[in-house]
Length: 464
Ligand code: PFF
Ligand code: NA
Image (cartoon, rainbow, N blue to C red; front, side):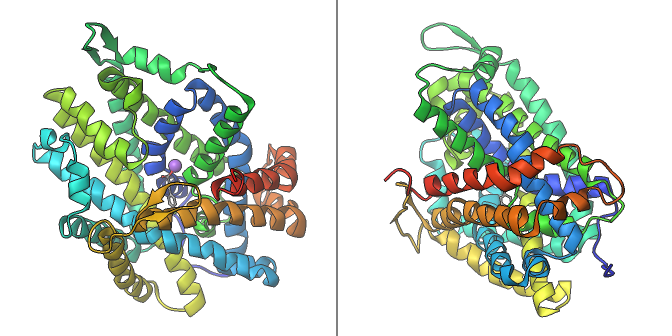
């Protein structure tokens, strides 16, 4: 095997770094929102089943391909089948696009952490606070550049001394913080305008109970598609990131256990995020108060924190610190994946590569941030929503490219390479790959069909 200087020290370091990539805003602002919108427990059940089947299949494939080829996406696909190098390039382009806006979101979160630390919780709860912040031309740019700079510094320090070192303390702390806030959420209670006492526990039951009211076949399919697209965004699969991280795993590590642990970590944090957010929103603003995406984190939650009174500042600080950790570890993985591909293509050193990429992405982050002010645009996306620069990047990378890439790579693994390519790697040290039969069926038949439908749906073709 080719000797590589870049390796995680062992299983734990790898699992925490990969979990760092997986746990991000998807867990904090998308999962709770979808669970509340898509029938609570019904969504949870569907999501958990999909994690164990579909998510497991894609995550296993990415990691096994990475470790087997010892390369990042472009090199890995080329090594498997030279004719499929194009798919590698396409895969590489996903983090290239995501990187233009991920630090922007990280910057917003950092700004809010600073706001809560400096005791301005009530200002953050004011109407239009978020809009006026992101549309101002200076402050959000400064925070985006800061976030981008910290990310670059960590990646500059390498796999073990940068990424692994940071993940090793950040991920356990993140887990503790989420548990603490979730427990606090359950203890909340508040008397609403009608004089009724609403408790966090009731909100928790609302989250867990399957809501079958008005369930039609069409709605069920919609929930299924929501869960599916959430799932592969959440696990950071089909964008080459897990291929890169997989290429840093030592040959003796048991990938079966690693895959399980990453799935449990990501899904556990998603569930806990729902447990901290849904009861809190339920208590203070009822079932209608759940914002979607950024508006949940930056508009709905600040109002909830304000309603908590004095505790709100402390909870706000803990929450936004949690969110910084989640976003930073994901942002690191995006930059690392781009860096690794570039190092392999151009045969440049890590330090030089990171420096060049930093310059590019500092500029890109500034441009995307200014997409809300100086470079304001409004584009009607094919899925019917209206977006600015950030939403365009997000739409192209996550809604168009990711399902398309996932579809093609299931065809490559399932039919061209055949599933044994992955299975052999999973059993490299004589381990038993327990869900082998499931894997074969999923990668060859189920996953391609699901990805195809998801692609049609997320590009808006299905609804026309
Ligand atoms: N997996 C992350 C989440 O659930 O928030 C999102 C993500 C991270 C997407 C890294 C893309 C990426 F490159
Ligand atoms: Na996630």
